[in-house]
Length: 410
Ligand code: PMP
Image (cartoon, rainbow, N blue to C red; front, side, top):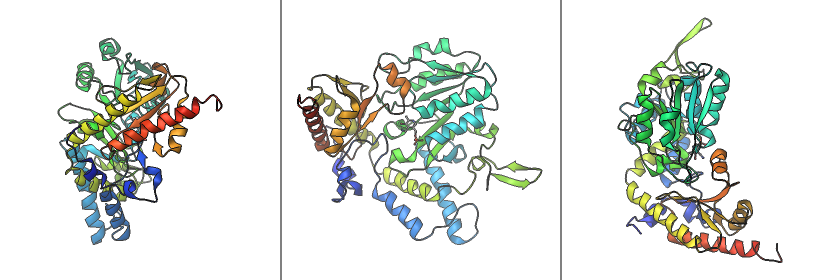
């Protein structure tokens, strides 16, 4: 066990102390969305209760103040990712929208019939479907980087897969099923030697393994605020300025332009040209408060603690006959099955005991297929989980199995 003070961290999450909210008694579904800290609730409440104005439009004091906060939040995200400039940070609705933006605004104009998009088999659908869509629109092909027996993209195959037709490579920083992390440095290096830019899906990775987009020479990076204790409906696209500059707006509307008439319009500079319409101001302000709060958290110690909880859970559940783990080494996610039991049956009975897991295909059907299964349960650990949560999980699984294995019940 590490020295991380989980009870202090836990104290920031009202959902975990509310007596009338038994639903979150044992929350092991943070990979789907994280619980929300007091800092987010307070900042959001303050925005709606007090100074609810718009940004980049009106001239009154509240609007000017909020515009400043909105833009300084962009700066905070740039710092989080070690991006040189806040102009390379685009606010989106989430990871999904950020990847769609790159597919439609960067790739579509340059993609030609017969071109290829290299996508790993381990991807969440958010980092697969947008590429399939744009490939179909342009007559291009999506080529698979197969996973190895551990469910990790087999990067050894990259030299053969990268060709003069490869216009983009899409790779996840961390699998939302196994928690496995491919060697991004190696993958980026090979792709760049081939002149291919890389889109990295950081939806899971951003919380567990903060990444330096400048040091790693990342081209595009996306994540969602809600997985990082922030609000839903907000995400980030980082793009190298030289790419963003060459991309056109993908949605039209207010404030993405400098001049408009019936004969056309002139686009704004980056990043504003990608933020048509009134943005998620409350979300940005709330997320800014979360990022400020996180500055006081030892994220490395928090991660080591989460991994130790996942390890304990894996070790204790492995005592159960038929337990199969898909957990990558050093991961805070524990995807598992019990042989002969359907994941949906098990998760429902576990949920009845107040333990929140997720079961199914985790929006990663190709990976689930490659693992040779129809789905799995997944327990995901966050720094607000406590050792008692592991005990509750193991107890709930054992109890559920006692019902499912009961001859009379069967
Ligand atoms: N990629 C991964 C690896 C994810 O886990 C998720 C969320 N489940 C997404 C992409 C999509 O994120 P969002 O739904 O917030 O856009």
